[in-house]
Amino acid sequence: MRIMNLLIRNFILLLLAAVLAYHYSGCSENTITGSIGTPMFGGYDQNEAGVMMTLSALCYVAEGNTNALQIRDSINLQLSDSNYATGGNWKVCWGPGISPTGSNLLYMAVDSTGDSLQYAICVRGTVFNFANIVEDIEVWDMEKWPYTSNGDSIALGSLKGLDTLLATSDPLTNQTLQSYLNILNSPKQKMFITGHSLGGAMATLITKWFMDIGLTSRFKLETYTFAAPTVGNVTFVNSYHVSMIAAGGESHRCVNSKDVVPYAWAGLLNIISDNVPTTVPALVAATIQTAHDYLKDSIVYKHVETKQSLGTLDPANCGPIGEYDTYFCWVGFEHSSATYLRLLHADTINWGRR
Image 1 (cartoon, rainbow, N blue to C red):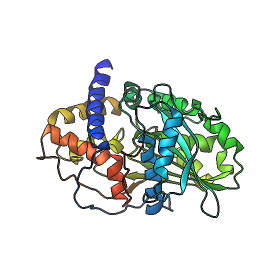
Image 2: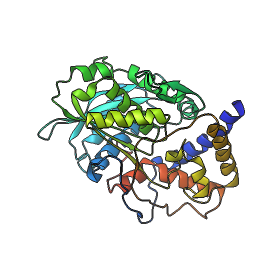
Image 3: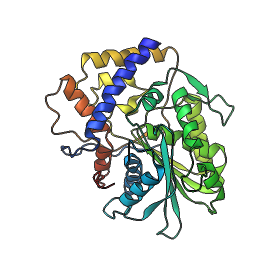
């Protein structure tokens, strides 16, 4: 087990380093290819997805900073930009809630410009620190989902992340997310839940939590996740779908098919067989094979809802295909929030303004 964790941790470290290399870069790309797939739930809207991906990307705006008030100011400064898909219409209304290590963060935003208020719970994905690396790889153990008793189980690391997020509080009012939601006077106003990468996985769990504690009686729920890995077993997924349908909600799992992260932890071998995102080096393939061999005999993960394909976008400056460095250049490009925004034809974030 220890050797397994070390192997996967090293792979994730390389993946995260590749992602970070592209996170703030002005990398070039080729033409978008592919077509929009057919989701399980209706109601997918590309413009709406662009807004949600922008809100998700803005969770990264102050990485390395644990001062919640400063982060809130930075997010609001970005949200004032009318060129983004958010149109200058959104602002932070709760949070951000941030863990002491800075590894977990979420905030809530509101758009009050329409006929009725729209809210969004936005969760930050992977950041480059040890706590989040461990959270990403603690998939070898599952824990029972604490809000139902029907056999739902999720990854241990994901449950720890959820507990941490729900324990955070607003820096001004000291209210937790649940406390804030409980006082909102909302006659079935829209509530989006969104996140990118690990934030997408956490957004899935927050969606299930939102439904299980009965908040869908007061809000119209719609979830958009981007580049999310799996979080739970088949029972969890079935329960998620049943609850979403009963609530009259919608859920969209948006993916770039050349992004490796959505293949974790269901479909790992497809990374090798389909050469995702390009020719897979032998050492990487061996690590993936080892992870698959361990999981297939012990734990079976499943994605929620059918994926919403966004097409693909190839980098123009990663170098010759088949080389080790080239591979992780592609991995970082395909997984970055900027690539997802480009696939949605939305403006990317100006990281210099924070």
